[in-house]
Amino acid sequence: MSDTPKGAILQRDKKTYAIVPRTPVGLVTPEVLEAIARAARKYDVPIMKITSGQRIAMVGLEEDKVDMVWDDLKMDVGPAVGLCVHYVQACPGTEVCSLGVRDSLGFGLELEEMLVGYEMPAKLKIGVSGCPMCCAESFVRDVGLIGKKKGWTVVVGGNASGRPRIADVLAKDLDREEARGVIKRFVDYYRDNSGKRQRSARFVEKVGIDAIREAVLG
Ligand code: SF4
Image (cartoon, rainbow, N blue to C red; front, side, top):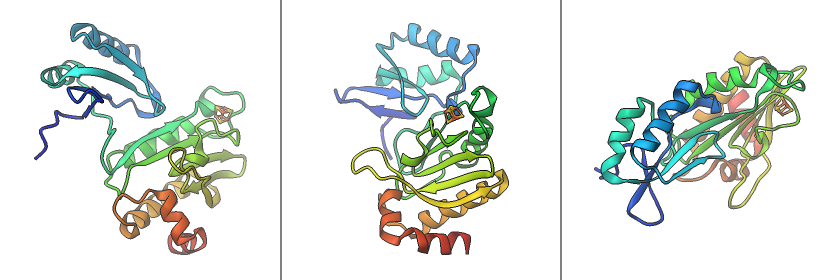
């Protein structure tokens, strides 16, 4: 059993930890911000960082304070390490953006609820964009969605870090339910057929998008 405190990531100094409260698709409320700010003041959190995954990391906590901060926050842990779905990132979409053609926030929330923490061969990130401008970086996410007039396009195997890769189109012109089904089938297929720690980019490269289409869309 690990000694790492709940939801904590050991920092470079090998003494302090970061935690990342769960804020699905980056949506927060005044109450959430107040709870985070209160805890940060009370426990002297030295660094607060808005992450690329649309979350607020509280960095530099001493080990004995981690559980106390979680008790005060009363929020779920946002997975930030481990072999699982880490987060779903979404752009504002039709909720706010004048260019939006699909509800990326609503769909992103639905996918986060369905998949976050889901065990995987490697970490997995999802980006949901409400139009082809792709502000949620869908083409460099393990699973990406792009909202278009005819429906959702699902892309898989993208990666931004290390050896970057542009995702392949798995399916297009899907309604929300169809897109959710395709994503779940892809995620399960990847989980069941990939080597441990193999990111989806390398998996899609190795298997090939045609074979994946055949297996997932059958
Ligand atoms: S992807 Fe489209 S809908 Fe989303 S924020 Fe960018 S321009 Fe707006």
